Length: 242
Image 1 (cartoon, one colour):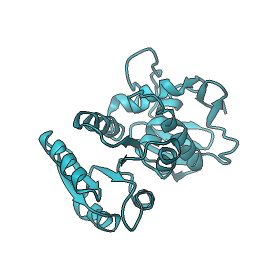
Image 2: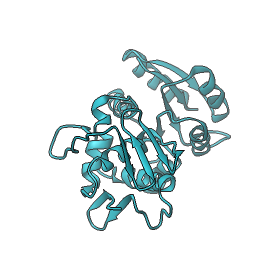
Image 3: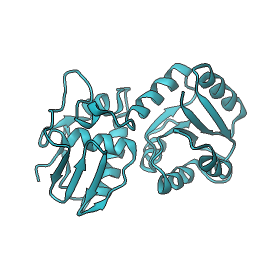
């Protein structure tokens, strides 16, 4: 069972999502606005937030930013707006995934499971064994690695730079763990989608680009000239070489 906070003003969507998730055994609390959702976050302590973008009053983007200022709880944006700009802006605000409404209960459940797997401190994940398949990250011998000024504690799922803790959202952390487990190896956006986000729907490469941008803003000295997460033009991304 997962505690889910749904911040959504459309009563039909509220009822549909609530019914679908309760049938699957989840506990759900509903807030009809961002103003109601933020205190519910403190009271209900959700394990995952489903957030509509087009809310009355405080926008969904502002709610997302405010949640990220305080918490690393996974956030999935639910929106009727599926164009590129809306999706990128939502992801850049700190969301971990973006689902276009209407979405079936099966799709919602699958996306929730994928996001939640990123925050469970599983030993396999910490060791870089994200998934079986054509692409696999190598085993690592030590739990705390240093890469330049960056220290990555794979067992504790902690990242620090020059001794100061770097707070990463679940998707940012899992992306960093995956890339840094194979320094110098290039991964395409599609491969990263499959390994980090665990799905590969067309167009979702934007998830990767938005997450890389947020990660760079937190770990790079100069995000415009990154040292850790580098772009390989025409293919994808790699970690280093430093």
